[in-house]
Amino acid sequence: MTSEHNGFHEKQGMMIAMFKRGLGALCLWSVVASAAASYSDHEGARALVDELVAEERGLDRERLLQVLAKAQRQERILEAMSRPAEKVKPWHEYRKIFLTAQREEEGLAFFAAHRDTFARAEAEFGVPAEIILAIIGVETFYGRIAGSYRVIDALATLAFDYPRRAAFFSKELKNYLILTAEQELDPLAMMGSYAGAMGYGQFMPSSYRAYAVDFDGDGVIDIWNNPVDAIGSVANYLRRHGWRSGETIVAAAEAGPAVPEDWFNAGLVPTRTVAEFNAAGLRSAQPLDPEALATAVRLELEDGHEHWLGLHNFYVITRYNHSAMYAMSVHQLGQRLAAGMQP
View 1 (cartoon, rainbow, N blue to C red):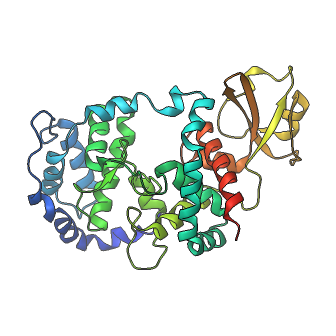
View 2: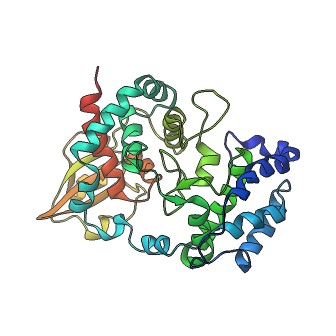
View 3: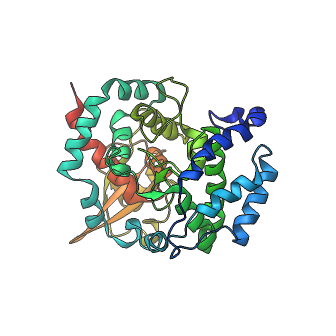
């Protein structure tokens, strides 16, 4: 995994001492109520630790087991995973969560407090300030709602008790244990979402290690409490996923009766040209490069549908959250914020 932490393997001699310091706070934690199951003797937990120690030779097996012994299975997390808003709400309900006057007002206040940082991030990474701001707004209400679950509980619960995505969350749990060692953090103290996402921009541990940056140059990458690092990290994430500066994100379109039904919502990756869509009767309301690749999006309204052509940068936003409705919320919130961001 490439990241600002790629020196990790050259610093393996420091890992044990760093991890011990990060675990020093373990003595402050009392045993959680017996109603929650511990992972101390879980076969999967022990196997994960064995794999991690084999892969990252600076980590201590017994201390890793001590951490996982304090991780607690959370039934609420499993329930939340079964009903994500992107899958259970139609667009006309989903957008009401994010496209609100309060989210605009708080976004403009957050922007005003960090105007210079947003300007520097846009200049260095090529991502519009309003898109960076909108993602932080959609993810955590500008850092105000960043998650109430211990990250260790979320990742352990999903790695060991959510078989459908166990492989993904096992990888994230490994990355979390490594990054808390790298950053000298208490692995039992960090808070995040029910899926283990962290900080202003809700980075998963692997994304933290790959894309988070020390944007204020203080020698520490902190996406939990430092909005400067968070802003730079979100911008870096989008750039590293292929953001193209100055290009259109998404365009409203009119759909004729001849457009094949299976072209709509067929996938997030742009695979057909704008010219192909135009020829089939799906025409953009604004001029677009005929050779640009796009994907056709149909969103459900209360009394019908609206249609869009999502271009390359729309796809890049979905790398943050694999949902067309998510990307549309970010885009439309960004448009609203941009209107109030001018000096």
